Picture (cartoon, rainbow, N blue to C red):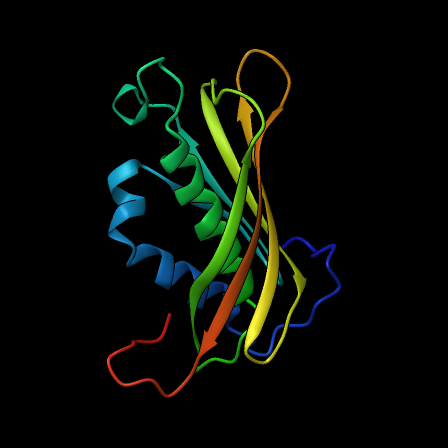
Length: 156
């Protein structure tokens, strides 16, 4: 496993398997063809190949799809630092769309800025990859909530 640049120590030694297992349960990630490619303490990357059926009217990847992958990257970055019996939910986020999402693939990076017992603040970035160099197309600031002991909410 590569070393995290964050310096955070996960509460759950099995955090990577936990994040991968939860990601596999997300039907939406399967639907859009997203793949979890990096899991470190406080850091997650999700890769999405370009598909025509995920575009808006101008042929760019839809803002909702961009938001979906960066929200999941941030949520899983937060989950990576949570206790083994916790689950995560997004409670607030802001996305800035900086450039048209045009590329062959997109990578969403989620990073924990400040972990907390109940609330974790994350930042995210989405890059377009193609024949040109990496291009930043969106940023996100998100607040994630730790859920524990909630009936009807499964772990993950």
